[in-house]
Image (cartoon, rainbow, N blue to C red; front, side, top):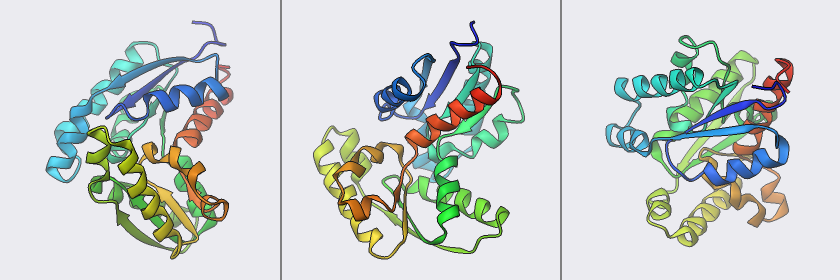
Length: 226
């Protein structure tokens, strides 16, 4: 494979980000060959158990191993609910792995203060908060985190009612922004709503898709792959 045509493997637990991320990569890394792996049973299993199980971790590691075997130059994990499985996967493969939410968490830590974390899936809250807390600790930063779930919003989205989902999430963002100087959107699928917010509110909202893709480009550049 040409060094100018990197193969980027994206691992999904729903189809919500396949099109948005494809569009983001078309903008910032158009020469990339994208390979999407999607297993929507993963998120269902996590939600049913209330946490990432050993079986889910094993499957995610197998997907990462498969991506490496398929010649991926880099792997992007697109789901925050299973983000911590990548800590295990990084010990198994040599291919670089990017967590889509890492750049977002880094920026939240940099801004510090009162950080609100908003999710539509309850099982995403804890991993996202732990990621922010670990980065804050590593950087010697002190911050407070307020967690909030838009109950039922994800189910509404999966049922096809994007309009109702959007209304619920926008209301959640606006309410959380009143008590926070930074609002972190734990689900990448929520990012498309930011342009609908007033400028003052939007300025304090962080989302993951574009930051994750930019990190992919950064890693590939440093490795001389583009």
